[in-house]
Length: 477
Image (tube, rainbow, N blue to C red; front, side, top):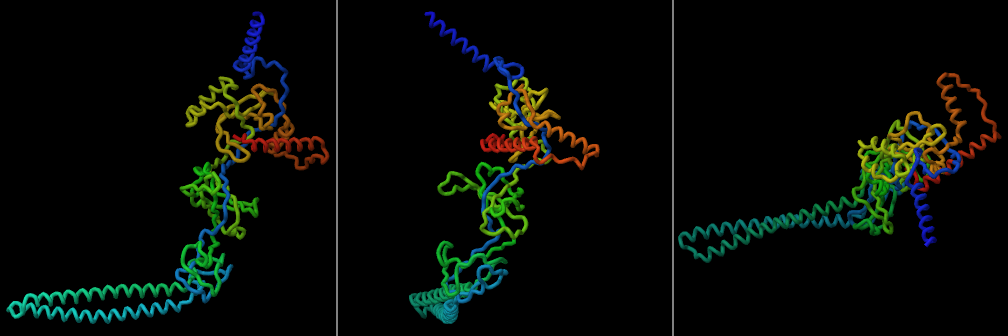
């Protein structure tokens, strides 16, 4: 019985300690049981910067001419003349190739003869109709004096009807024959294939002496060549479905060719497909987006691979901090007065309701009297390195900018050790000298083998690597 009572007492004590640690906080937001000596956290500090920030959407694609025409035959025939070859420049109306037209000339001759024959036949049937009309009128007058029978009158009337029908039939046959003649003449003109646009022969699929046929573009012998207008180029890119709602026609774009990933080429969005496509074997839906190259550039060639950065949002003169400076903190780990102030500030915004329900809140830390102070902030757009702060930053505050390893463990009231204090002093001195116009242009450069310089370089490299690891881990707000 005593043993059971002892177990109950131990369990009660443990539960009480857990409750005190998890649900009771001091004014600085720490557990009341936090009595261990606290080590200083090494951080890098700085002030928020004002800069233009651009949010972009990236999409891969292929370069192609904006205006490109597949040249194919509209009639079957052998190529007897082909004065151009791949790479030649052509103008609209230039001869591309000529097909054998002997058969089509023969068809025209036959169709013309049929038309002439029907015209002569019409003359004959019109004469027969006129004769039948006169015979019927004579029999009609005779019937009025009972000089002919009713049966004989009916026979003459039938003969008139048949003669009229024969005349009409021949006229319809003539219309058909004339249409056949026009079609034969049109086929004859199609044996001469001319360039529809100015451009270059970018591809050639046929040679002189080969027979070309009509049909779909997938069948051999249907395509003769491709004419491309290289004066205006476009990138047929594929935008991920998650980014597609942000992309609109007219937005500015930067094009990076696979052959030169460092230099951008200006462009703009022409249109975005209204229906997404899913490549075979993949579950990703993309929307085809056409991006026009703004100016002619000899580096841009059809068939090249390219990546497109589309500017979907932009904020000029935005107050920004590095993306790693904004961290997420649980609502229950923050002081109530800080949360109340934040909710009052965001209540008027469209996202206020959602923010009040959020378990994690975006937080930026500043330094006051050597300790960390939390500020709940609203963020705007972001790019690869910086994020816009819409509200929540106190004026003139020195913010904790990194490294992320320190920010991840930083809490309200944590003791701070600034690692870049010398850099901050130099920056302030430089600002004062610039303002007074007394900057010393002959200041000595740091010694090449200065241990402090080497240590600063190593620290900067380490922080850069940590920042890259943070982004890879998806911690960017």
